[in-house]
Length: 368
Image (cartoon, rainbow, N blue to C red; front, side, top):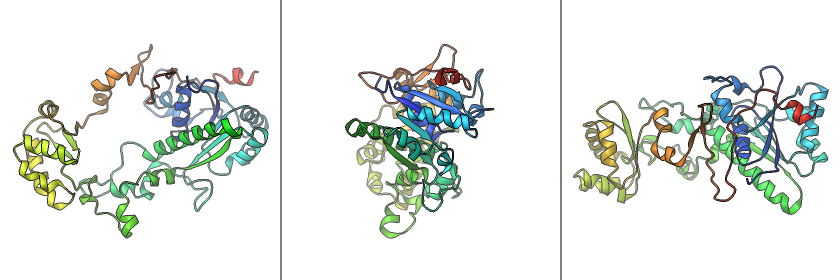
């Protein structure tokens, strides 16, 4: 596997850091997860549970080794410093300054191990206006304007279904770690990576920030091309109380659908977003309400357009494309797992679909 021989110390909790280090473990890195005594990583206790631990934790803990260290004790800090001194990568998600107070900040570790790639993921970054402030995903979605773009039919912000700030900051952290490791091959030196969840999510607004950058104005959300102003980027009800989405605004897709529905003359209305598309929206709303979702799925599949059913999670997991590609796997214990998304032709991943018990590898790793 691509990352065999890489040693990673993981001091992160919940999602951003563990998402990063799970990707490293899936491709062969030895990831040593450091947990506090007692209940360990809080992710172990996020319901629902299975026989061993939570589904959340097995998704974020698979293939890793767990050791228990009390970082409030001198011995625990000494053990961690010893691990970091022999590691290639360290990932932490403490509030800024905490790692340094524990004696395991980048300056201390890199003085002993100049090749260390040290990644810190925090809500607002290591400096700036809010370095010590705590925040989770939803607050960051609010502060970056993402919630002001995600409106329900009542015009109020709607809570997104997945924690985008957590995920994109984890992916930026992953790319930073890999870039630093690549550069280390030339220089022999590691680096320090400061990932701000706030910045990572803000940068993800690149495709919707036009009016704010150009005119210092918030967009008219309901009339923007991807937030409500396009008949061809919209959710539609079907006769059985289900929904489908039409999600392709290229003119070829617009003409294909409207032509098949006997309304080709409406296509010019869809050349740009805005309230003038209302007649097309109303036509599609009335049309899709006449038949159940299953009918439309079969019919739409005959056309060259972009569409999809609004699936439940069980339906999504059972999607025939995911099944055919082996994207959702079942282990020997009957538990489901997501396969790694990055697929190499040479040296493919060989993930271990088992999460560690709390402290399972303490004696092995610390050799005591």
